[in-house]
Length: 435
Image: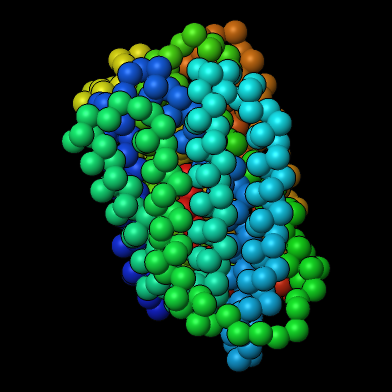
C-alpha cells in the first residue's frame, strides 16, 4: 500500500518530505527550548500565540496555496506562465490578511489582556507571524503548481532550520523573554519565502488577467473546511485560557501534549499528497471498487499509526512532556488517552475528507466539519475540569466529524456519473494540524 501511494507522488516529493521532517523537528526543538527557558506564565502566552498562528494561518492561507497550485499547474500544462494566477492569489491573500489584521488591531487590548497577560507586543508578533504564513503559502502554491518540489521542500527546510538555529541561540544565551521565541514564527517563514523566491520570479511571466471567479470557485467551501478543521485540532489550548485565565500551567502543558500525540498527523501529511490523486483517479474513471479499496487501505494505515501513537502516548506521555518540554505535571495518563483517541478519530476524518474531495463534494466536507465543531462546543460545556472539557471537545468533535463523513460517503457516485477532479499534478503537499 505504501509503495503504491509513494508511486503516485509527483517527482521531487522526497525533497518535500525531507523539508516536512525538518519543519516538524523544528516544532519540537522550538517548544522544548522555550519550555525550559520560560516561566509557566510566559510559556502559556507562547502556547496561545502558537495555536492562534497555525489555526488562522493554515486555515486561511493553505486553501489559497492549493488553489494557486491547481490553477498554475493547469496553465503550466498549456505552456502559459503563472503570473496572472500569482497576482490574483497574492491579492486575495493580502485581502484576507488585511481583514484579519484589522480585526486584531480593533481587539488589540482585549486580546492582550485575555490571552497574553497584558503584553501587547505579543499581539504585534501575532500579526507578523500571520503575514509570514500568507507570504509563504502564496509562494509555495506557485512552486507546487510548477512542480518545483525540490524548491518547495527547500522552503520548508529553511523555515525549520532557521527555527532550530534561532531558538538554540536564544536558549544558549539564556533569553527569557517570550516575545523573542514568538518572533521566530515571523522570521523563519519570511526568510524561507525570500530565499526560494528566485524560481518564482523567473517563471512569473505575463498574460491576460485571470477572472476572479476562476480562483474563487470552490475556495469558500475549502477555506471553511480548513478553518473548521484547525479549530477542532487546535482550539483546546485557547479554550483553557478562556475558561480558566488563572490556570497558567494547563495551556502550556496541553500544547506540549498535543505536539506529542499528533505525531501520527505529521506522518499522515507525507501521505496526504499522494492519497488524493489516487482516490481522484479512481473516482474520475468510475472505478468505485478501486476507490473504496484505496480508501479502506488508507484508513488501515492511519489506524495503525494512530493506535501505535496512542499506546506510546498513554504510557510515556506524562513523562515525556515534563522531560522534553519542562511542562508542569498537570496531565496524567487518562488525559493522554483522551487526546490519543481524538487524534485517531481526526486521522480518520482527514482520510474521509480526502475521499469527499476526490468526489468533488466540497460542501459535504464543510458540513461535516461544521457539525463536528458544534459537537466540540457542546462537549466543552460539560461540568468537569477544564483540562477534561477541552480533551472531550477534541475527542467528541473529531469522532462526530469522522462519523458524519462516513455517512455522507455512503451516497456513492454512480460509475456513469462524471466526477470533476483537480489536475493531479496540482495537489499540494499539506501540513496537517499546524506545526
